Length: 305
Image 1 (cartoon, helix red, strand yellow):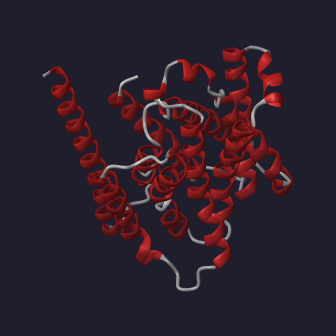
Image 2 (spheres, helix red, strand yellow):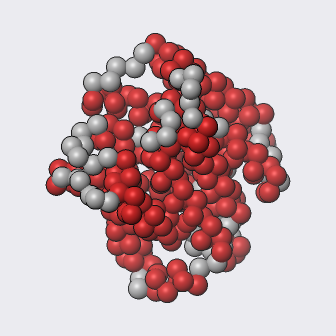
């Protein structure tokens, strides 16, 4: 897979991830932990069917014997699936989103510390610019008395994502390592299924008694399959080509797409601060990818010459 195609797939992933907000605006009875439970349950069901088709019946025996790095990644997926919704019950949406903006910086730092992976200056500048843009979008909406507990839980989302992207890199899912070593690398796709099962099991007791209508279950089933299962499988594939920092940076597009979909699908018109910050985020991503493309083209030209 080429770098350009990987970037395009990652943009698709963020678009699929961003559907949760607009779809949740049309729920009738499901709330909080029940939303997380149904979404994770349908996610687990879809992943079980897809991975059984891909890996065969041996998938389930393989889960039991999976190396610790797969289980660690599964736990990260579970935290990512669950912590966002839990944080929303404890603090403001604005605070959660500002915490998520720390994801690229955390990922770049972990990759530098544990993988000795150097990031080009353009990536660091893009991370800073995108973080400023997201902070600008929501800073004025923060309440003065935001609970510390909510902030700590919200911090778990970008932290778990950063650890997960780093684990995927450590597992050998990089395009430039795709050789004999890649064949021996652990299969990280089942980790996505483990995360879904852990999330569903953890939130079911908190979701009881269930109040979702048939309409809600249909919408949450759609989210479980197309907003979680499909993009999470794609991002594991994309991680073979893109660095963890680049994945985390592109994932910030979820916030921009989420605002746009809520505007078009739920009538939530964004304010001028949101539009200004969103423009800064998109600009940082576009410049980063343009510089990356130019650098690769220059390198290819030197090789040819």
